[in-house]
Image 1 (tube, rainbow, N blue to C red):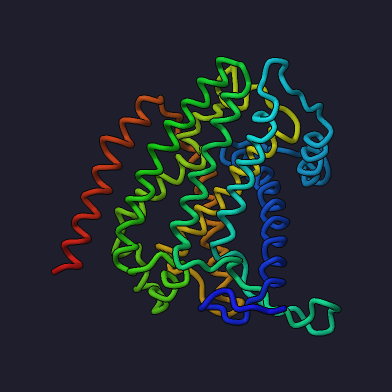
Image 2 (image 1 turned 90 degrees about the horizontal axis):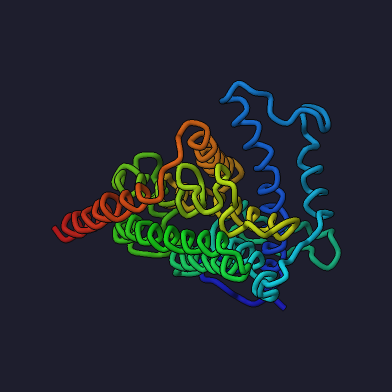
Length: 343
């Protein structure tokens, strides 16, 4: 039975939302997995290497080999670990990442052809849940992802895991403040938390993009987004240059893989938010959706580019940057925006 769920998309029904949710999980999981291959190829190109080359033509089957390895690798649970928390932690990380994607515009809306049995004529929306507080919901779900690494480190009975979990909590909580403050100024300008309203506010073309009105907020959001997705130069949560792997020290197999599926899904979410809030969003029709795909692809590539070009920072440098540089700038930007809007 079709029921009206949202004001902006009056033809959306339960079946359309379920189909959209399945599409998000299937396609974003595939993109997240393929992103690992793209990252290795991009880093290899920038460092004058070949990258994966031996599995399949040009290494294209490396993704399949990695997936088989993760699914067949022994699932080890340490003897003294809190087994329930140890098993649940990766699920929290992946689940919160995909739940956040339910409120952002992912792929264009479409209607299933009428000749398809049972589902014919079903309208599938671009946003699975077009909430009037969509931006707040996405930030809240991404913040809830903190519990995955935190519980993972605390449940291991491993001091290195506990230290890694503490470092994770400090980094996430600190940079979430900057993320929220950086988006507060654009929210004040648009007067809404809905992604549809952000998109409509910039419908006039490139000159209406919020990046021209809020360049400081855009830069602050990007920097905080790098930190919240555990990307270089802020990849201190699971640091590949260390002997141990932080909160993921004791994990193996698919449980380990779920942490990084969640990470890549969050990279896509951050890219979509940046594209919709600051770079004009999407417009109706296939061409409009191609533009947002290119914008999201650019931000995804930027994260890989920074990893290849930028050195790691120390934890104390990271905290100094957050609390003594980024947060004061974000507060000043919010105050100046409020004064300009009032005047």
